[in-house]
Amino acid sequence: MDEPKYRIRALHTPDTVTVYQAYRPELGLPAARDGRFPAEWKRDRMTWIKPSFLWMMYRSGWGTKEGQETVLAVEITREGFDWALRHARLSHHVRGLHPDRAAWQRELRRAPARVQWDPERDPHLRPLPYRSLQLGLAGEASRRYADEWTVSVTDVTALAHGVHAHVRAGDVEAARRLLPREEPYPVADGLLDHLVH
Image: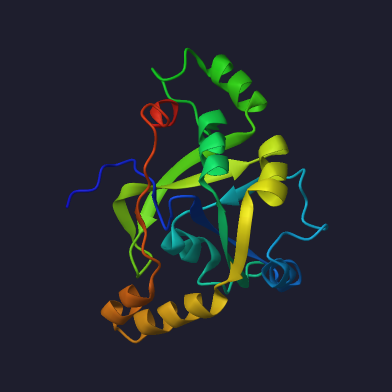
């Protein structure tokens, strides 16, 4: 099946969507243990969430990069995720989508969320010809993510290492069987119109 260039693919239920982040163990392990982000998690900083497990693996080096050794699956409410998308702006200027660069910059400064579309990855972490959503949360969105939208936090570092071990051993089918089942995320009509070009 041909994938459209821009589509959100995620593990989701009727009420939640799972996104991935990677942290140093001192932050990630307490978050997973308690099912919520600890007080020392900086709610005033931009935080990036990724619905694609393999893109998170690409970003974190399978959970081996310094400061990203603990990979978390964060289940959040779809209501919160959709709110972030509705209030997000593209992280880069697109001619024709924005009146001009200055207008785009003004919108971006005011927006509590921003979107980047980066190439999705295969199990070897090679880029694919379609895009994966990265959602940056700041200000109100970051606080709501940590304190209102989060339903559960699970340490999936062992899963990351297990998938990577199969890939290294050349058994991509075994790796695929372990991957989270990411399917097209249902979005309301028009929800992504301001985020695709």
